[in-house]
Image (cartoon, rainbow, N blue to C red; front, side):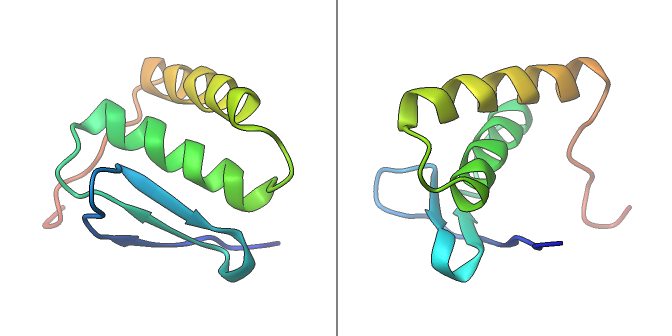
Length: 80
């Protein structure tokens, strides 16, 4: 199993970045919860499937984020 490492980091004008060769993503920590979920899935898909084009990644990321959101997945506070 390939594990994706993540780091919260603000990157000039983008909400997330994927580094497939390092199995790593960077996510802007200021995002609202549902957007954080969407961007995290989006960037994770780039790591897992680097040859898939952006349009397909966008579609898949939004569908999966919406599903998980409707199932009740939310960001937890750090002290929980």
